[in-house]
Image (cartoon, rainbow, N blue to C red; front, side, top):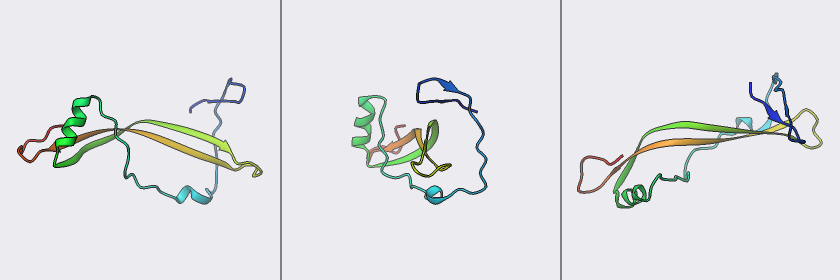
Length: 102
């Protein structure tokens, strides 16, 4: 289990959450499209700019950050936001090359 910080900045022990039912937008699923991609070097951006086609080779979740906040005026109800960070390997194809640049 992870640990959470309280409002005064101290760390308190994590407690398990037991729930019989999850309400509202938990069934809401966001599609992963139009995501921002940050390249490791300027040369990588140049390869993408010159590509005629790109394919995703693999994607891996490298970090997940959770934010748990109590909903005001609804005792016992919380909102949970999860932010994911991905590492993505992309194959970039140019019109004059059959071998992709990864």
